[in-house]
Length: 170
Image 1 (spheres, helix red, strand yellow):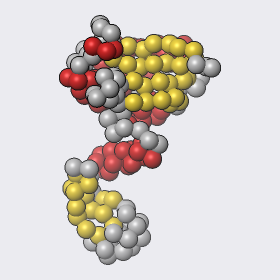
Image 2 (cartoon, helix red, strand yellow):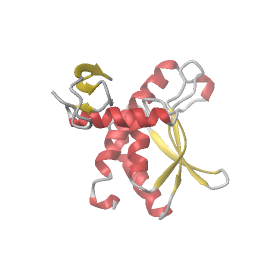
Image 3 (tube, rainbow, N blue to C red):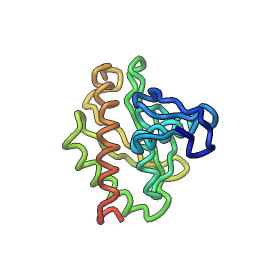
Image 4 (cartoon, rainbow, N blue to C red):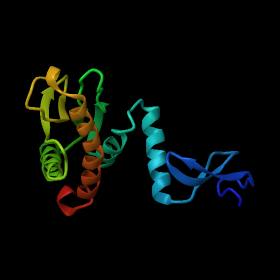
């Protein structure tokens, strides 16, 4: 098998990020399952930005709308009792974009372990904070609750990816 990108014959099949793919040992080009390759490229790009793996798909879909810019994202820290959060700013059409995001989060809440919300804050500009809601002080949040919130990140990304393709998001 030759590499489609560089023509090298040094292509091997190996497991990458849990997916069995072909990789060119010369240029690093991947071939195989397109969805797996897209996910791996998304993860690699997110890691270059310093993002946690768990939050990368959610950040990717939000930024992919062209309506949001990432301010900060964290998948949370179980050891510190810190829940996941994503801080965004709107690029344009602010009220309509916020409404669409709120609607998507509300629909996703039906599938998630915890209830997520969107808060507004002023940090030199209007910032949207997407986070799970805990009905207790932050010091009382358990490791299991943080794990549940981290698992919700994937569900929320999946739901948003579905919603942004629908007519009411455009």
